Length: 524
Image 1 (cartoon, rainbow, N blue to C red):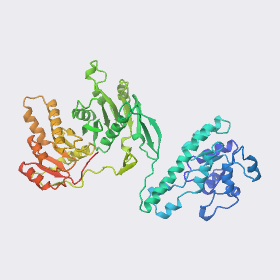
Image 2: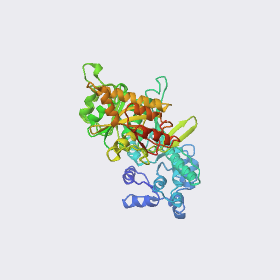
Image 3: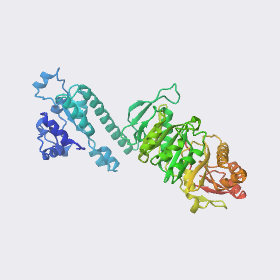
């Protein structure tokens, strides 16, 4: 056994009910040091441990003791001097652990277990009579099962452990196979998903859907703890994932307002309530029925923004889901006043950086996650963006745009001490249309916040300080010319178009500063 967690406590309970314990090598030594009587396995196999421990448990006697049918084969077993073994407690050589430690090939081979899987599979096959336990976390349930049933496990419990055992060996062999393939230059990917739970419905109400959890992935269900509200749907899961990923890497207090997997509002700053207000202002209409995520513990002051108890129901802000790493008790109580609102506690910072997977009718697309923002910040125009003052806004805009569906244009600004998504155009086949949408949404939001009598001047001032960011290069200078019409003076794009030189020339003619990042952020 590689993981000896809880083995002493388990052995003591087994001894109490009269079990004889058979063990090998290190486990036997550990039990003996604890004063627990142990039978050396060689006295059962009739052979010593050999070949540096490669041969220990594999034998006719051990496998027969596990596999024979206690009713049909009873007489034959007796004639062969085979005494039944009714319990196997075994976990395997730590192949995954040494793989994660970048062990050399020889060490990997050394950590391929043979006898362990053989015993586990034998016991699992004969679950009608034999209990098999492969995970220390199952020890307490096993002990309780024995105590409730006069020292015997129930068939129901044995069947459950049988399923766990076969999944355990399947995952183990799959990891070894994938590793050996990679060693020989052939990539393969075997994944195990289990615990499928039914969702409220699929992408549309007439479609059924389930959510499965990947084994050995600690970010299960995005580390969700659903504290309140009705069941989640397929679309909810997609939006929840988008919301969490949007705020995961933020360096400040952050809030994302998600609609159809896109952040229609996003803000970072120091004060959570203010950050929420500015994120909401990014698109107050689209925020209706949205998913909202925070990267810091949700306070009552922030939650009160939703105005859920307003006697005028039209003043209440309807949202589908609110997500935070933790929710203060008084904030939770307030949010629960909306019976259908899904309140989710999520360990946002623990989200796995596992690769992106897309299943497409029998094919699987696999890619690394988009975790970088830029590989350069280079200005080739006469006018420059002052990175000493505005690098934080540039990087904020890049972090937003990589979470929005392409083609994408977003406009970001500093408002007091906050970084705000002012407007965006998402999912457009035509980049110019995306620019028009981002500009129009920004104009609308600026008009909503302005209370003076010279909006045109205010619009010009705000656009001159904002930054327009594109997720991919400009194939033509038309986006630059459009930006200029509305007084936008700063643009960030990856570059790489054959028209870059022409785009730079137009920027210089129009006194626009353009920054090249060298990194595209398509999201499909």
